[in-house]
Amino acid sequence: MKRIPIFTRSDWKEKLMRPQVLVIRIILGLIFGALLTRVFFPAGGMGLMFLIAGLLVFFAYVFEYVHKKGDS
Image (cartoon, rainbow, N blue to C red; front, side, top):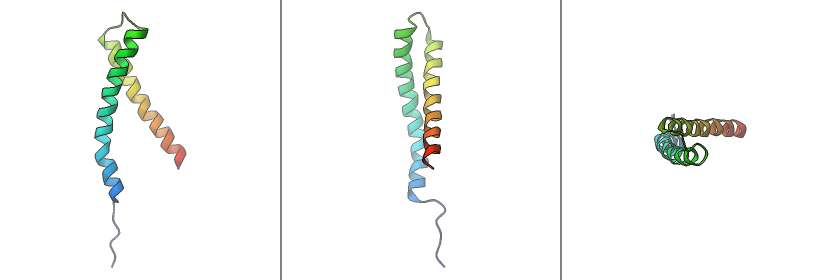
């Protein structure tokens, strides 16, 4: 009797890459959030920078979901 694998190699690779993608997005979100805050809101504080960085990361996941939804 032939075994049917529950997960393929690509599934495991994708599951292992997700935390790395999150960390990269957070780092880039903080960098670009700081740049956007300094350019457009010079009087803005750290709270505004973290808010903008969080929005950038949030919208990255929203756009990824919309893109993957359109592929299927």
